[in-house]
Every structure is written in structure tokens, then in C-alpha cells.
Image (cartoon, rainbow, N blue to C red; front, top):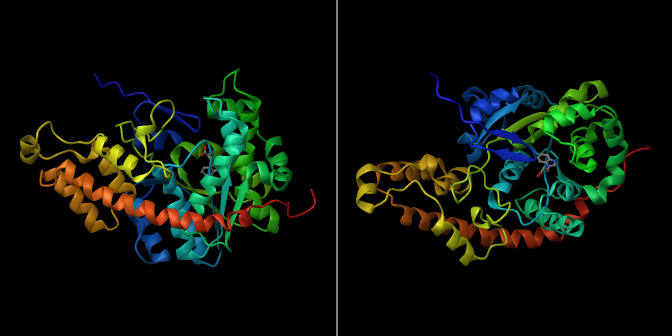
Length: 384
Ligand code: TRP
């Protein structure tokens, strides 16, 4: 009898069960990232691929090869990604933006960031006040810009501030999306508030906006967590009928939590599951020291049998963001598997890098705050 497959489900509003990423990719009907595709990317962008791409954290896509071929043939694209602000960002929220920043630096392309302070007010299960989502929106935006985005080529849709600029296009998008579609795609129930029913139209807007504003087809690439794919299936279904290119997508896996959860979610009483960007050094140290690892019960056993990186939340941090070179990543992985590198030492080495990142990030964030406002789009480009 075949083993019963573990159940899981992933929507933008809920991740349940232990995710089997390959099966999820098949369910969503997306393409896998092949070595040939990575080689093409490498060829076009030059330099080293960012860790999250080289190590398979970005593992799925839609229409990426065509977008890259277009770029190589003189058809530049723009990047689009976003964040729903409900509190401080944690390190894994930076993943999609670090990739965008790499693309911008290598290829000089524009970046559009969406800060959805409306979405998080509508979707929050804990009832976060409206003013709070906006306040966190500004904080999150500064953290994102601090990753090294180019002030001249970076633009923000801050939903509650940019609505006048977005609305003419949102109206047209909303006209084409049926209730039965959003109900099926997002799993809405009769008690879902109507803000959320409309919201997906706003998440599509930035993908079409440059084409609409410039009156010509501008291709779009959206790096995002695979949980956001359902929104963009809707965008892609509408695109051609509305005269815009279908956005291409690059999907990442979710980063596992420090407590051993399959996602670094901090909903409820799980604040130790993630490293928040506003955690002080002592808190960061405590969270890392207490984190779930793949280590053995005793040192003797670990020296003899080695540990298991694949289940370890600390290894996940090395893999996604903190091992700066492939050599360092291999050293940590092999040290762990062979029993040479014990968990305490591994955590110390990681902490050194995390602390350094926090120190540098703080300076960069203060600087970004001086120009964040200038990126916010407030006016529609043309008559309604
Ligand atoms: N819905 C996303 C969130 O909850 C925010 C978001 C808006 C986004 N536009 C996006 C994420 C584009 C990725 C790509 O955080």
C-alpha cells in the first residue's frame, strides 16, 4: 500500500502542514529552475550568483527564460516585489529583496516595491490597528531600501499613500476578477471581509503599472515566496487581455523557523521563531543559542555519527543568507555532517556574521530613511 502523503496547503493567507516543495510546484504548475537556466542567468548577469539562487532556495519560476532572452536582446524589464507590514521584518523577509537588489545592481533595472498596509489590516487575525500597519510600513520600507537599492531607480507603491496613482488601473483589474476565482484561489469563506476580496487587484497593479504609465509593453519579473504565486496567477490570466505582458516569476521556498517550524512565522506566541531586525544583540544571541538544530543527544554521539543539516534551523540560516561564499557553505555543511563541527561552535560562527550584518544594516537603514519618502509614487501618470 502506498504511504499516505502528508497533507499541506499553501495560500498567501495560510500555510498548513509540512510543505513538500516539489509537490507544491507541481500543484501550482510552475517550472523548476534547471542548471541550464542558472547558467543562462550567470551568463547574462555576470559575477557570482547570489547564495539563494546558487543553493536552490529559489527553486521555481514562470517564464524566466523568455524574460532573460528579451533582456539579452535589448528589452529591459523591471523588478517588482512587496511586503505586507504588520510588525518588524525578520531576516528571512529580506530574501526576495536581496535577490532584487542583486538584479538591480547587475543589470541596472528599475525596482518597484509595494507596501501593503491595507492588506495587513484586512488579513490580520490578531486585529492589528490601522495606524500600526502604516507605521510598520515605513519601518519595513527603510529596511528594504537599506539593502542597497539605487535611489534613482527605485519606486514604492505604499498602498494607503499611493492609492490615487494605483486606482485607475485597480478599477480595470477588479472589473475582470470574479468572486468565484478569488474564493477558489485564496480559500475565502463567507466570513472573509470584502477588503481582502478586492485586495488582489491591488497586488496586480504594480505588475502592469509601468506598461500602463509608459504606454508600451514593459516586461516584469517578480521574485517572491511561492505562497504569493496565487495572486500572480490571477495577474497572468488577465495580462494579455488587458494588453500587458504576463509577469515572469521567481519563487523561493519559505525559510524554516528557529523553533523547528517549516516556516519562520511569528504569529501568536512564536516570537522566538525568527530574528527580527529590531532585536538587540542579546536577544539575537539568545534566540540563536536556543534554536532547534539537527544535533545529537551527546557530544560523543555527534562526533561519531555526525549531525543532520537538513533539519537544522541554523543550517537554514547559513544556507539562505549568512554563508557568504560557496566554500564557507560547504565547510559548514560538511563539518556538520561529519561530526567535526559541533552545534555550539557552529552557532558562534553564525552569530559573528549575524551581529556584523545587524551593525551594518542599522547604519544603512538610517541613511535609507533620509530618502525613502522620495521613492513613494503619489500621482497617476495620465488622465483617469
Ligand atoms: N502580499 C504580500 C505580503 O503579504 C505583499 C506583497 C505585495 C508582495 N506585492 C507583492 C509580495 C509582490 C511579493 C511580491 O507580504
